[in-house]
Structures are given as structure tokens and as C-alpha cells.
Length: 106
Image (cartoon, rainbow, N blue to C red; front, side, top):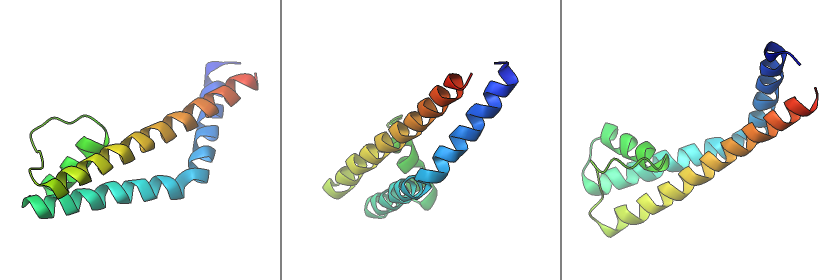
């Protein structure tokens, strides 16, 4: 199978897989943002800082420039991290499945 056809097949399978789990993905993203906004509200952060914290924590990067000090914020940060791990795992599983199907159809 030539590379161009493999890329096209992979992209088609990837988008088909994303279409199936889109409600779960969007729910996880909304949960991450919502928990980030709750954490920011409790910690007194701006909207931009709250969303930034949510995605940095959700993607498990965790720069450490923003860290919650209250118990509620720390609990939300744990939940954001768990949702981020689920989101990453789901995307990776879809990509691996799409690649496996694309290579197998050769």
C-alpha cells in the first residue's frame, strides 16, 4: 500500500472513530473546563487562568505556575487530571485502532 493511500485510510478511520465517541470526548472536555472554572472561582483566578490551569492539568503537563491552595481546588485538580488521562487514553485507543485497521486492509 502506498503512503498516500495509507494516510487517507488512516484519516478516514480516525474520523469515523471520533464520530462514534464524540459525545464522550465532548463531555470530558466540558467537565475539564467546568472543573477548571470552579477551581479558578474558589482560588480567585481570572477566567483565562482558570481555563489555562484546566488544560495544563488535564493534559498532565502541570507547569506548577498555578496551584490550588484550598482543599476544594485540589480535589477538582485531581478530577481534572483523571479526566485528562481518560481523554488522552481514548484518543490514543482510537488512533491505534484506526492505524491497525488501515494497515490490515493492505
